Length: 240
Image 1 (cartoon, rainbow, N blue to C red):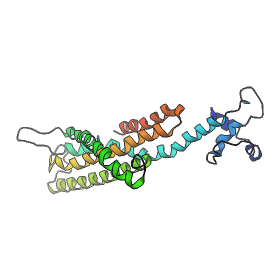
Image 2 (image 1 turned 90 degrees about the horizontal axis):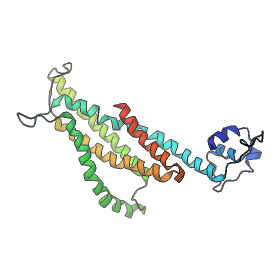
Image 3 (image 1 turned 180 degrees about the vertical axis):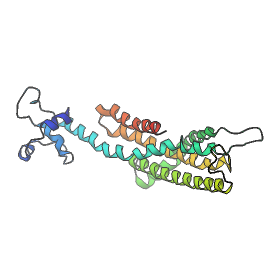
Image 4 (image 1 turned 45 degrees about the horizontal axis):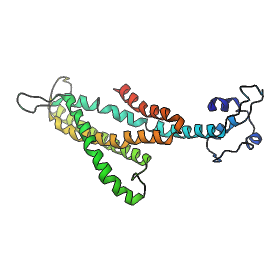
């Protein structure tokens, strides 16, 4: 409703706007102060003035939009563990014994293993160490946690690219580049590191985003905040 009234009262002059003072005197998203003004027709509906808290809550929600949009890049990385990594494993040597070949998608279990191992390390070791340095209760802020995860996701994709370059080099050496169902003589265990790093990025990025969107939105919009967080999962699934 606040956004709708801001559009309706967009004709308000700067003189009129000076009559509207917010509790926090926020200069950001000043157009959301316009719902605090009555529109010209003075109708019962349009003349209803929004209160200051409504405007400030909408401003708080609007401030999250740049963070939400900029983190969509991680949704692309999120999808690679179930697309690119799996396609790499299909073409590699998956033999464990002479009679057993590991399923190529089974390496995804290393993501869960990495998450299970790294969460206690993060909570019991990294947080106390960083807390003594930063003085922050959580060690680092939620946005710093998300940023660290995105940086690690870039590192993960760089390692995946190097492995892919090595795989193509061996495939060219054996003349297997244009043979779709051929098995490249390269062990599938080359993929383990990128799967493990991907699990660590989830501990930083996905947990950090969930905490951020639940904690930073106004209480009345927490369901919206969680839905914004879940959009990353949806985009990751769509990219598969």
